[in-house]
Length: 582
Image (cartoon, rainbow, N blue to C red):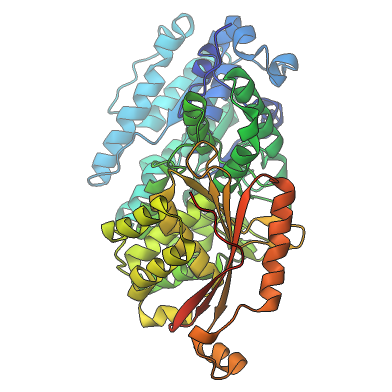
């Protein structure tokens, strides 16, 4: 049997199976979806929505009945098929290619051309059944052509159609985020081409020409505006039954990585380090239950595993560049009010949390709410940039998102993050000296901060920005842990030398402490910063972390540091053990 492949970005289910791709079996959800009428399920970009639509299509497509065993035989649904498999015609819409440029007539023209082409494709897909389907004119109303199709199916007593709509909100979101309010209002007006399209789908369900409609996308912004035309939908996005339908659980990831290690004969000694990396960078998403198991972003994880399986080393860069395009959403959503943008981003960089109203999350919202400051957290939750921390606050889910938001913080405050840091990073690589590295960070980065920022900074700010700066230059040799859990607390920041690079086995454990100018003066009176000494309780705290780390990695060369940041006055770095040298 050919070696299995890690397939990244493949959204065609049959291709995953026939190309021997690794596949996390989510087919049990097909049976669960089957009893839901007209479900709408939203998830962030790059979470596997298109692959799910494709899987549903191949499962229900009567044209693939002969291939059922090949495509589904080894899956849960293949072992437990429902009576409706391979029973319907499939009409798969994907709104992402539809351009929203020009005026409303041009948008309608693009919509007609795309949708009518898909409808007319039934002749080719099912020639026995649709060879004499009345002409589908590309410039005719999509609702009119759907009406023809439904009449044809009923007249000939054909099996009904199963419809999937992927990225249902795509071109509407383009209008909203570019602040084309009049065009959006025209798009969702009572007599608009989009509303009549959904009214036609509703009629198709009523007539029995459509057996079900599965809709997916990113944002719920259009659901409220389309309600009068399509009030038959069941919003299952926040239903706990479907929380793990997209994204990988820990058990699924463990099994997947087990397979890759075995099939590609990767040294098992690297496994603990790899597990830690993928959890830090790709895990952390809680869409329904903040106290339940967090999920991995499946597509971005496959990005890592593709590189890892090919070279058997940790990639230099752990962030998928496609994920960075999400930053454009931040600019569009908050750019109309720079003050709100700044406050929102500053809050996440300093606190890594932001309050939200749970009622807003479960309710539909419209275009006007979308740009309201109180809705920022909700919008970014749906975009996958924030996740549930508890029932009252959202937070950044992982280190990838922390890096993205620090980058945006730097841009907002016009901080120079160009090549000015090359010398300090190069010096560290040649001779690791963490106190000097932090001193250079303070001199070159912190010195640029506006005075107003010093009223907001805290330990989280320093560990996050220091981590982001170092990861931009040192990721060839290191990975990082931020707030790693130990029996008696969480360490602030850890440098971890990659097992296949020159700093293999090296670990720096760093504890950050912050005092405002007034706090430092009140607690330590007139002690100058140069005379300040490391506090006993802080030494005891970091020692607890290091002892826990030694139990996990007895061979590691561990150095520990406590870093005090005092307002805008300065800092002290205390090395509690001699640093390891190379």
